[in-house]
Structure formats: C-alpha cells, structure tokens
Image 1: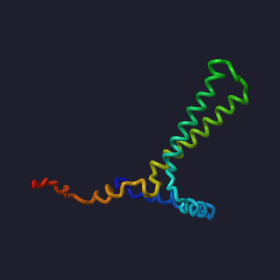
Image 2: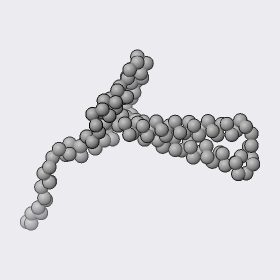
Image 3: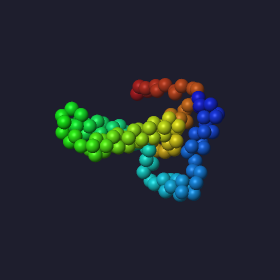
Image 4: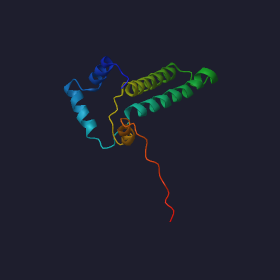
Length: 126
C-alpha cells in the first residue's frame, strides 16, 4: 500500500510468466500443494551455502591444507551459488512475489480496514 504505482506495475510484470516455458513452470508451481516459501527458503539456503564455502575456504587459507587450485575454485563457485540464492531470496521477498496462502495472517489483513476496537469482555457473577 506504500508502493508507488510504477513499482506495482514492475512487480506484476516481474511475477507474471512471459514465455510458454515460464507459463508451464508456473502451472507446475500452482499445482503444488506445499505452498513453498521461495523467498525465505532461498535466503536461508544461500546463507548456509555461503557459510559452508567460508568454512571450506578456511583450510587452504589459514591451515595450508587442500591448497589446490581446483579446490579453491570450487570454494569460489559455491560462494557464487550462495550469493545467487541469497540475492534471489532477497529480491523475491522485497518484490512481494509470494502469493498469499495459509502462511499469511488473513484475520489481521481483514481487520486492517476496521477502525473500531474489540468489545471488552465482562465477567458475569452468578
């Protein structure tokens, strides 16, 4: 609701499929019953991969073990994969591409339009 109209249009064009392959992939995603959280999952997986690449880089950088060019190249490749997943997750979350499903609080979003406070509860003595 705070986003400018141009950003909303860009967001809709980003999230809608534009090719037949993307349309087919979207139908597969829509038919999945799990309601996956692509943004959060990608963000967390990317951070874990970056941390793991850092741990594996520790050995040749500080201990002198596994000081092979191919090993260091693999560490950089995994670091790049982690950066990709982290950037994808950040973009997915920031652009708001996640569809509303069972994970979104529908009661709170329905109450956003209401201005009245809830009625207080009164205990009746018998």
